[in-house]
Image (cartoon, rainbow, N blue to C red; front, side):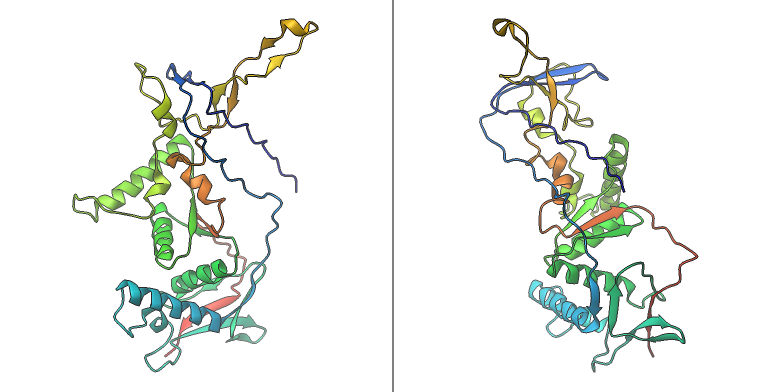
Length: 310
């Protein structure tokens, strides 16, 4: 498989002035030198080779459920001894209310775990525990350093999944459309969902930083008649001319500075606008949550079935 890799642009030097230009709205501003040295933005290791989790034992998932219950009890989300997560899989007497089955030549047979190698389907009736199992699998993989993608049908479902995992110290990133139109749409959907639950008052949501829209570079830009283009920020298009970058000529004494070149913003490691990209790279960010409709393949048979027992 051939992968096209775009070379990383050089960071603009914060010690020297730069220019931001947007020909579409006829905007141009002078960027003042900064009195700080921002850290370099994180880079994803493209040499990393993924590996399948392999066998996931049922007992290990139950252990994760117990850990979730401990978190909830200490945070006051559960009464002492309630064991809500454990109770989704067992009765009060410890008997299983959910049974994991796998396909065999003779039909469905009981399974003590799952072999997560290759294509697998997880199916079950509503309330059988499929979503519960996803939460437990996410935490199980996080404990073991796996990076895994979960695909969800909407931004609202994705953020809810992320915020729930955060309650159990499972860190996750959110990957969604970053074009100007797509980003504005997702921000509006997120705000709309908030407005239905806050009765007009402000609320705190841990997923809110994923939808930051303001460009930090605007704080260093000169005042212009046209507003700074926060909706089209120059993340990869800060114009700056290197101090020692000159055109080579036959006469060394007649060398001339080159034209301005597009560079990556030096604030990429701290700007809220680029929080999404950083969270997908910085360890231990184990999961990327996609906000896209899932695709079902009618030709693929399920490998695992999750059913509720009587």
